[in-house]
Amino acid sequence: MLKFEPRWRFTPPPDGKYKNTTIPSEAQREFDTMIGKVATQGDRWDILEHFKAAFCKACGASHTWSSSESWADTDLSSGMARAAENAPVFLEAFYDACQDLLERQMFAPDATMINEVCERHDIGYVLVPPNMLLRESLTAASVSVAERPPTVAESAMEVLHKSLERAEHLLSEGHHRESVQETLWVLESVTTAFRGVESAGDSVRGKYFNEIVRDLARIGKGSTLEHVLRWVTSLHGYLSSPTGGGVRHGLDLNGGVPIGANEARLFCNLIRSYISYLLTEHEQRHA
Image (cartoon, rainbow, N blue to C red):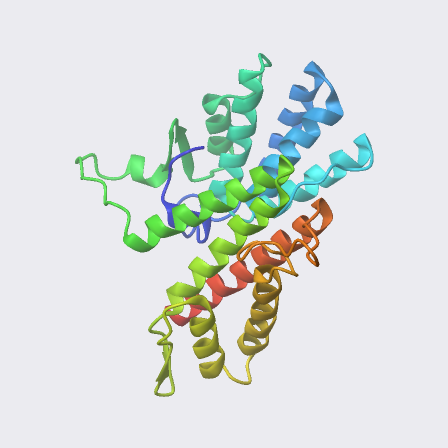
């Protein structure tokens, strides 16, 4: 995984002299062509799925195998287009996928080749493994400036991102309950960011998940947020219950039903969507 500003995962730097926000369609096509050449070295379908999984991960989406090699090609293009909406995570996904193939003794584009594509299309990033740097920062003043340490909030976001990655890894290995448990932990953690939020003289004063959600729903009464929090509370309650998901208080051995692969994928996707919504809501309230 490349190292770069954690906040870029959510909001890339704005465009300036270079294209920093998204990967332009011409560059996407060039990266897609490179994948096609890599795929000539082995099982083409498998390699397409390998890159597709990397771009799904970049989007925070779950990866499932396509029904055919042709569909894998189509689905990969769609996944690349979605990931391209955030330039740094797109580049990280492509680089990481290539590194994995290099470790499997296959030839794949390295940082130099990726940088050449970025330069041709005026994309504002330079890969200097293990770091990804803004191209503008390299062409700015040559005076050495101490790097700003990440804020507490940025460090926290990095922790949450790694936890979601672990959940996806657990899911792929068949650890269904653990993957849901890990994703639920991220949801509970994200809600703590709303502690202290104020609106119309009211504020979020709760310390724990249920208290925070209750307070937040109260100050957001009548809005979409209130309805979303109602669904979040319902899902959280079901997953916590011994006769529901059983991920927090143990599974009822008499009436509980263990989480299977299909349910785990559903719960993880639902929770990820709520996490994304709440992070955007929080960002808007602090804009």
